[in-house]
Image 1 (cartoon, rainbow, N blue to C red):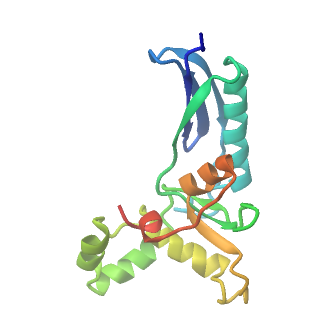
Image 2: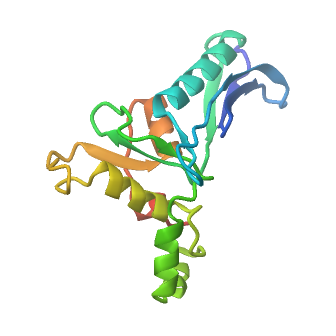
Length: 189
């Protein structure tokens, strides 16, 4: 008789990554967490170190799996800081920017300029979201302006940069394949 399968759940949150293994009845088999620090380099700015975030995912998952029977996890669910963004190296997955947190307000000026130009209704019509710096598009603009666009100020024409929400980056690193951003990952619903 085969042992019942288990499910691993990972919650990559703002202050910690939490992992839990449950059985088919929802009973906890193992759990673990790993802390994650935030930086505030200026008023309204909230960042995290991408490698520290990755270590928190790896450490929480490893500790949790160490407390579960080996070979029985058959599914994994990942929940993340949805509106947080990061740039990374396309080949290695290594971060090329800080992770800009969902709490970050550095896109406030951009949103104010767009609102003053009358663009708020268009933004809502296209994205379904209000014009607010919490959402990913303003953060993406800031990251690209300050950490370079391929062929932009940095002169990087290699196409080696990619970026997106933390779920695509950390989930891709777990699976060994890091995907990039698209309109749906940056600002859409």
